[in-house]
Image (cartoon, rainbow, N blue to C red; front, side, top):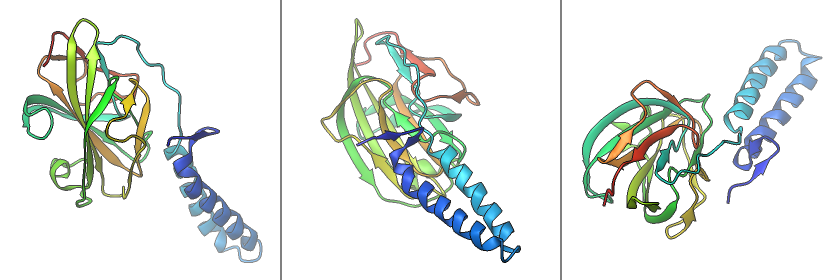
Length: 227
């Protein structure tokens, strides 16, 4: 279950606490052994980065039911058409979002709906920026079915992909759970990628190279019934 403590996601608190304790311990002994000052400085940099990584900002979510929002912070590295065979089971648009170590790594629900499909696939840890990562890396697939007012039912698939440094995907939802658009649903620790599979009827509002924010950036609009 997601928890926010102060400005941080609770998943990061063990890392933050350990690095802070290590920094204080090294700094204490650095008064007697100045050479340890360099090590203390390096640990301090890691501490700052981990705090930055696990930050948990609030986001303003559009209430419009026909809007699909970004599930992740990062950069759009690819947009292409392809066949999706596990959930949508038809040709669709894939939007790939790369999150580097400086991005907010909390993932948010792209639409309001119910998790109808869930699959965990253990795999490799190739750099998430590479195309091969979408096929071979450790990943979690989430199929979401939602209702768009005046547009009928819509189904989309989100693929959460671990990266070169990432070693754990934490999902706070289960199959059968409902989600509200923009709600925090997962975190991928230390560098990763999210692929979003959308019906062809979606009118995209982003392009390759764009920077996006989870819950705020509009990925696309549902123009007609995609079922």
